[in-house]
Length: 426
Image (tube, rainbow, N blue to C red):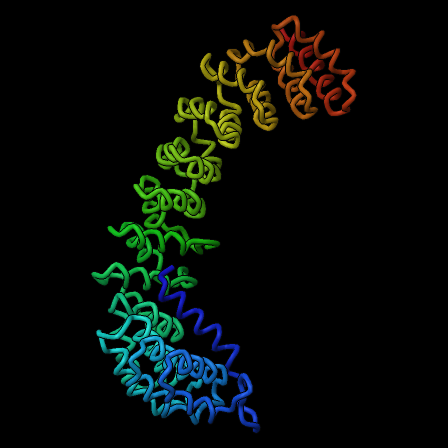
């Protein structure tokens, strides 16, 4: 997140805690009254003035008597930290500090001022007098300024639908920093009319950070209607040179993907991405396209050798019910010895549905009946029922019927019955 946005967030959060309604008794901080702290603003020592400004800010609206002194500090103090704290204190005092608005706007417009001082002054003016036409004009101007955009965008977001036209206009601003803030300002509104095409355009932005922030906007987002524009833009992002953006595109594609066969090539390509996280993130999309994955058979077989267990497991699962060739059978046989038990189990299950070529794996499946994990043994027993031509299988299954795990022995019995039925057929 932009550092100025972080600073502003801190100011706002602290403000919420500090703006309790004033009481009838004079405010006191660290044993000193407001009057005493105001007097300290004239101290020659920076540290004393800064401490006084912090104390006054903590008093919130109850420090209204300090507004004239805070305004002088804002305009005249040579220390930019003091000017920043003066703006923060005025922010916390709120609407009662209206007399300070002209000074705040002057500071916000002064390009010689540090950006934090300018931005906080703009935020303070908006907090004090949001309906003031001059403040509104300053907010609009600030929104087009890459340095002030985080502060101005917060004010626009608080306007709700009234701020939406300007935010969407800013999506095409030539300054990438402004586009980033505009994208962030639209979060939570993506199901609004016309929003998704706008975001799709920003997914193709030339600036990687704009694309990144657009991708982040899709966290926990569920589109209310299909959006081919966003789908296609996310698919394009699967090839982004920026690794983080590729990871996010793979993560957020699923809700937009649909089940079209034309999506298979880019999704499978992401499944073979050099980055482990991209490969893992695209798995849900790959699973959604399973009915169309026959054309991706070679890539799926290749993925059986992936260093990531979850990818090997998924590749084996996607190959289930596909006719296997010698290459696929060979890789799945190796996976029966995999260090990951889920991979071993899925390899056994897939071999059982792989057709005639998979019968070459019968010896390996028989060996898997001795696997230390009972789930793998059960799946191996189920798979062996698919190969009636192998004469060693019945004896192995009869032995498996004595397995101490009931699910294994039942699977062995079912496979024996299946083999017996197959032999009776002409």
